[in-house]
Length: 256
Image (cartoon, one colour):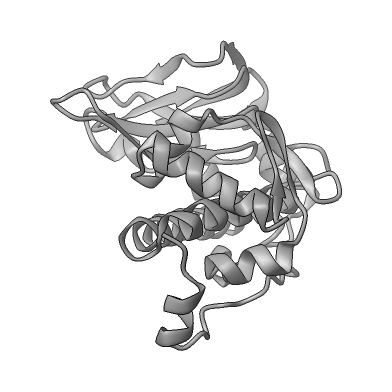
């Protein structure tokens, strides 16, 4: 199964050949986008939804002062704002981090597909609920975890998400972010982010400069970052849990 959407949804439902073929029609006419380009901008009409087939994209907003907040990452198989067509205009931006292949799916195609295939509709519900669970976890990450934990938690999450669609090579995966983009995601200054990366490297937990990221000690990184993969609801995915640390122990483990 090479279609990333099919691979992702198969984590939740068993799709028949007819259902798989119906989903394949959504990806039949992708468009190529250059890296670091906008797919759709805040204020644009919502004429359809975007399905990532290859590459990375991200959701972001820019404040009146020009500062950017990155709110989510999209990897192959992800649908950006599956229900956005209910609204008239975009209230955020979606851009590419890398060169990407993206299929735009019309409102009519989504409605027709889910009307004809209730099993696919349930799979889309699951996908949407996972997106919401990830958003809650990101809020927890920036609001209640220290800098080192924020960085490690995001790395663990992306490892598990990419492993679920077959895009991990051993303990390594493509992590096409700059330190500025990572800082804009985690609510950190670049200085604080750089210091946190040095801590993770010094502990022997990761290897990363630019490009592939290798998690050297997944169990230890998950524990240090208070990462528990249960919010991703992926069958067969088991990641270490450190959320069971008592509050004093968590404080002692924290590095600011």
